[in-house]
Image 1: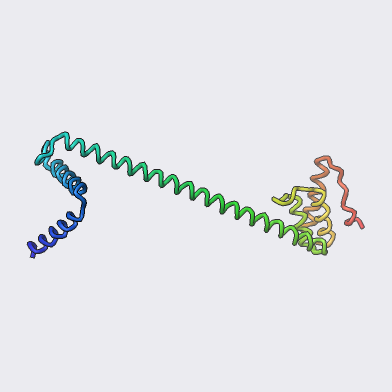
Image 2 (image 1 turned 60 degrees about the horizontal axis):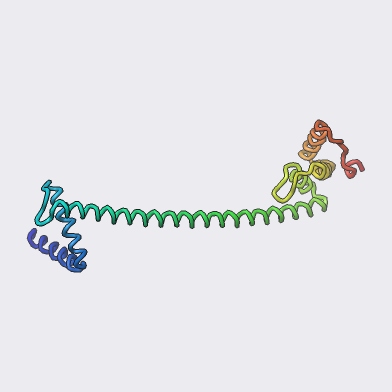
Length: 182
């Protein structure tokens, strides 16, 4: 059975071998001879001189170098494409976030104008800290926090008082909004 198995494997090897072009068969034979020579540590093998072995090694190194350069180019191109795709996705995300911020601001502003204390508090906080679509404006923050505080919202009362104190410490003239006084 071992003889039959060996015959089958050699037949497969021969059939694969004959599918190769003559140049590929020659290269394969050289590689195999070189491999055998290195195993046996023989300086020359069956018609291969030391110069042939050195030429083959140089050829193999040159091929490997070409492959590695091509692989580096492919990797570099793939990396650039990935970075470009990530930048485009980030830009889309930023655009969507800006649109959402503007939409949120418009909704909060309309609710605040309608008298909703929580919306007035949120709008005041947006003016205190600033947002991508809104600049910090302590006067408008004072106005909206004052309106929410006037409706009895504890957080707004606390922040309104702190804002008035901070503005007084900074030397700004502190005038409560006229809506709060009325």
